[in-house]
Image (tube, rainbow, N blue to C red):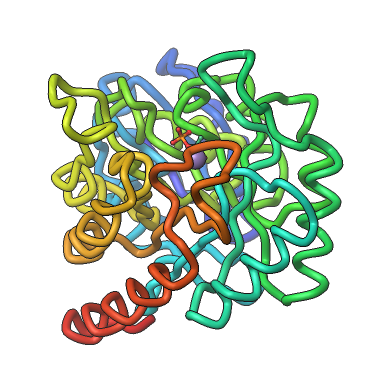
Length: 329
Ligand code: PEP
Ligand code: MN
C-alpha cells in the first residue's frame, strides 16, 4: 500500500501507526513526491493520517510501478522523451567494434530518424570464448559518438563495479536479459539518477519482470523503461518468442514506458521488420534495433543485424505506422 505525504508534512505520526500495525515500510522520494510504501496490506486497513494526501488503492503485487499509483511516466534521456506520443528508436550495433564503425553507424541511424544510439561494450556472451566487448575503451568511444552526432547513448552494464564509469559516460543504462533478476545490481541502479532500460529475462513472466522494476523504483529511481526482448519457448524457428501479449499486459499494469527489442527474438534479420511493426502496433513506446555497417563481419549477433539501408527502409514503414496509430516518429 502506498501513502503519499502532503508537501511539508512529517512522517512521524504515520510512522507510529504503521509501526503499531507491525507492517514493514520504506520511505521513498520518487516522481517529485515523498511516499511511504508499506506492506502487507492486510495490516494497514483503516489507517488514517492527516499527513497523507492520497492512499492508493492497494494492488497486491505491484506498488510503485502500478497504474493504481500513477497513470503515465515519461522517461527523459537528455532531450528524448520515452513514453509520450512519439515513438523512440534506439539503434546501433550489437557490439561497438571501433570508433570509426560506431560513428559511421550512429550518423546513419540518426539520418534515418533514430534518436538514441545503442552499442554494447560489455557483452553477456554465452561462451567465454566469444568476443566480450571493448569494455572501458568502448565507453570512451560511446562518449565520442555523442560528441560527434549529438545522439544520447545507451549501453548495457552487468556489474555493480561498472556503475560509476557508466554513470559518467552513458545516458541510459541497459540491464540485459541475463541480469534482469540481479537484485543487488537493480538496487544500486535505483540509487543513481540515470534512466534504466530493463530487459525482461528470457525465462521470466511478466510479473517477475515488473517486480524487477520495483527493485529500482523502491530505491528512488523512477526512470525505468521496460523492454520485451523475447522469451524462451518450445518454438525454435525464431531465436526467442517475442511476447507481444506481454507488451500489452505490461502496458495495462504499469505506468512505465514499454520498449521492444525485435532483433534478439528474430535472430535473423528477415524477421526484424515485422516484429518491430507488431511491437509498435501492440503499444510499445520505444524500439531497440541492432544495425551494423557490415553485418556479415559483425563480432556478435551477425545474423540479426540490419544493414544501414535495411534500417532506413524499416524506419519509413515505422513512421507510417506511427501516424496510423495517432503517434509520431
Ligand atoms: C543486447 O541487447 O545486445 C543483448 C545482449 O540483449 P539481451 O540481454 O536481451 O540478450
Ligand atoms: Mn545483440
